[in-house]
Length: 404
Ligand code: CTP
Image (tube, rainbow, N blue to C red; front, side, top):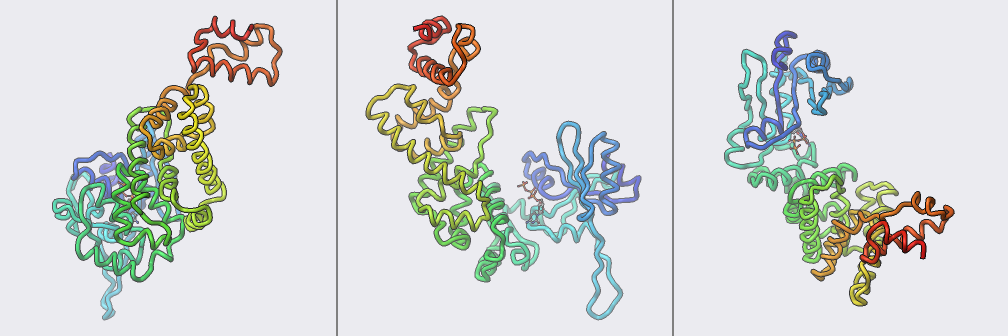
């Protein structure tokens, strides 16, 4: 219906970018990007009305997002007609605006479009050899200034290369090296660099991307202390395993993967240097404090559980050691403990112990004639411990236990 809508308005509309790339690769992609030769905002409004959807408009960029009732989003952009003056003062030339729009993009594989107007429905628009590069599994930029114009593309090249099992083309690789020699990374704001890193952390296997970044000398361009020593590689390998383990539990809970990767990357770096690196990433005070407090919580939990294990402590003691740690802290702890047996205990805590609640509540205590107060918290905590240790597991036993 987008194509019909465009035709009725006298516009051309194309589906572009990652969506087209992923269709050709046979991968799923839920983000639809449309480019309109015409007024993108007007088009988005009309299409949204047909789809019974909402629109969010960004007048400044001539873009809009259509938000469907089922939560799906369609990005709509306006392909601007740009006029180029010929050097010899020949008349201005009008380039097809979809071509200009695609030319501004990062890699040939992302510069493909599919025409959606009824008379051309489904026609693939490939000005820059994107199809060939998909077939040859190559990441290639469209022009030699691409990385200078947008240095974040260096990280994107690595991300796509690793995600699809492609390789960066020889010429493109040269351009990356040239751009790095120009120190272009220094001009990038911390937030933009970290945003790109965060996208890497969201990939299925971030570690190979980080190794590739290290090989290009990218990490040290970000900060000289940011290195993938064998220690860091080990801890990140373990971290990746733990994240995969956790995701296979299919819990509702979402984790902030970036926290785990930051903890891993900073694991062997002292407080002062870690602070400087986080400053380079433009972290807020709150974010920085969170990472620091996790680091110290994890360290003290490490020594407490070792001691607990040596003393053959009760399960409830393990519970109270691990209870203050947020989920990301628990997962990183799991990645850090070396002893397999201890790791099992931490995973047992995550999958079972942390959800345990005593069989009776504060309300039950009140019904039993106890007066509410700070004492309640202590009793409930002890009840929980009794339950974890299997001393008093059902309601009756727990009531007995309270009465004593
Ligand atoms: N793009 C670009 N330069 C950038 C970022 C994005 O040229 N620095 C272009 C690319 O053509 C890309 C499109 O904008 O296809 C959309 O960007 P994004 O959503 O980040 O990329 P996707 O290709 O959809 O990647 P992903 O599969 O990771 O969502």
